[in-house]
Image (cartoon, rainbow, N blue to C red):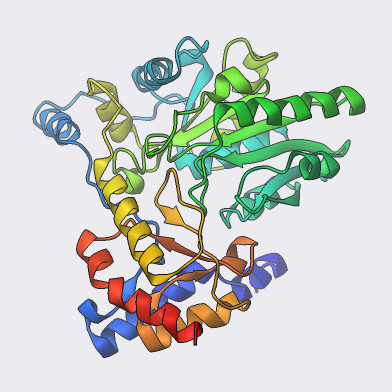
Length: 394
């Protein structure tokens, strides 16, 4: 007998998983080249050659004791490399190896951060649409998720946000660039967002932490890269190298805070304790050692931009209405009919196009597609998207 909460969640299983299983069924019927799967957000790039060179060198000259337990905060040299990467990206932000903790992916980082600050019943604001796992992460730490819809263009409605903040609000999860919409909030928007938080903190006598989830930090195609350290006071910067270095399966994530953050030492101690006691520990030692040997953790992401541009062209020619994504590898168009689940069902069964209903991300009337797919699939799907839209435009 499993826990009732888990049983309930299983019966409401992820739409992404459902579409993946539907894709396997359709491919068996129609063939791989006749099914167009845009449902999964799996990175399409491989790690850079320098990563494999470092791995090969290490395999040929292994370090004695190199696979032993390591500090719960992560390897010092890996934390130094991450701190230098962030300082190179954002300037002098007060991050060093003592204010970085390596985690089991960005997902592990979010769980560590929430576990470290939430008391039972504390509220965490999640903007909708949202990455579906967020609500489970909040639940893992005995918190309560509070949902705040984004504006029509998927920016933050500051007045609505202010109305959602109570004396129980302990944190806000802010994903930027955003999954599933691809929207990117500029730094000016982050500053305005922070001003609302400071106003409510003073009014309520509380502290509101921002868990800035930034796994698409190097997948930004339009506009200047925002600096959250300059804009947000109580910032927990959370990211990974899953997308930009193609290391998704290695679960290499981290949390970074500035030394200037009040009680920075207490936060880091809490993160280390949570990282240990949640049971998954930090990222594997070998991949931490490999990134510490790379000259740079910055990679040009032209392949994703090319796919973004091609996918935008396909959708525009077909007639879909959407906000052009500025980062990440997702687009979140409007469904041509109100029932987004029915739309995605028909897209799969009649046109072999696999999409994910927006209602699965807390925003009905839309659908999500990932353009982290083979380029030729985007090209092959062009006529099918036209046929799909025309089917509903009759």
